[in-house]
Length: 370
Image (cartoon, rainbow, N blue to C red; front, side):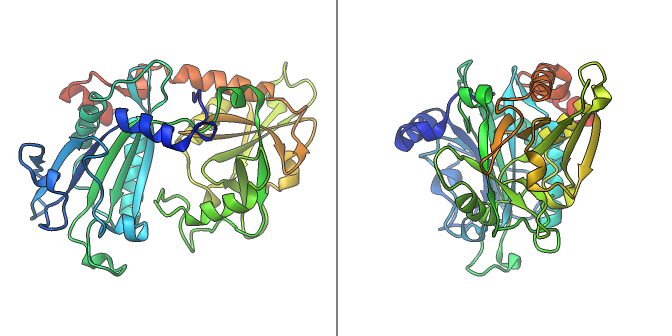
């Protein structure tokens, strides 16, 4: 779980810490004058045997050694998809699920991934093993697949081949105190969450401009670090980078779990989050009533019998104690939220839910096929 708040630190100091520790696996086609020279250097990189019909090289680098070419279509147009993956309890947590979603996103965007999952997992293990983490670190992989380098213009046919990189670093979106006390959410009322007719929210793409604009609108004021995005009809869709959950508790719920109803927005307006999916399953295991709803109104989130929390790889399970100036529950993180937080924390210690950092090639294959 995150233990430090990046916003409370000097941004330069935060970046200096990241720069000293982080490493990146980078793979891209060789185009003289475009591809970074260090990636072409045979003493620092290896040839990728991908059968693409072009020369591709990959390697592991410090962040100040390499960067994306200015003509990469991720840099120019956000034409890419990604996964954020936690490293915890000596394993890459839920790697299989993250790779499955990465392949789905890339397939929807028409971006070929130049490695098979087993080979890519091996590269991820190699770069993770080069980073030394402290026990308090929230270790994290940002895995990105870009359309690649191409001439100016959005036409994907101008690109010569996929760029893939995996940044291994730390992430800390919220303070330890935030998890103990909860946070407040605002509401973006003019910037709405598009549906699949515009940009399918089930694609985890690198184009977050709409979310950035929503956050600027909805998080105005002191102590409002996140906001709710609404559908075009005015119902709750998700936070700008996390999934939302509403808990409704009936009298006597502690002795009757069916008295707890867990609501989360329907997937046509939100990312099918991997942490979201685990929480839904854990809630069902507890015999809570679970419903995906496209008709949650912002006012539904307030009330004495309510709890609200949001989930995501970076945020984990964050209690929400106020929405747009209205108190949620008694203004403190709720008991059901704490129960689910405890269950998912325990699930993270299950070796079957991740790939061991010490796995050999055979173990990688068995894990991904499992």
